[in-house]
Amino acid sequence: LFSHMKIYDWESAIYHVGINGSTFEYLDVYDIMAQNWSSYHPNGLYTSGSSNVIVRYSKFHKGPKGYGTGEGIFFEQSGGCSNWQIYGNVFYDLDQSGTKAIEITSTVTNLKIFNNTFDNVLSALYIQASCGTGSETRNNLFYAASPSTCGTMSNNLTLSSPNAFVNRSA
Image (cartoon, rainbow, N blue to C red):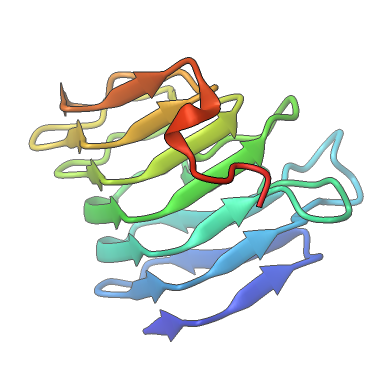
């Protein structure tokens, strides 16, 4: 269990490789940047070969130094990930080229992306591989962000006005 952590000012926030059954909750991740950005990209949560993982109630966003979370929650090309649940998170102000909220570059079976908010995100779901059987994306809010297809898509809301937020600037 990784809970109530603030992770910032690193080249990558979390490397999660070959570990099963983890839960990440109440994280605040921002200002993730690699010094050698041209040859190495930063990651919010880099994962490979990990199953039965939960990411919930966390914030992934641009920080005061102007950096976001790089590749975001990044399912790396070598694969082996399944049964992930990503829910109740807020991804916001990830509006720079190269930043992503969730990136899938290998098949992830049974991936559930539920009840998240994507606000002012250049690439909410960057899909380069199949989301795999049993994957679903539902009940998410997309404002100034374009949803991508990841498994079964249902009940997602895409807004064109900031009026959905009581006080967007705060």
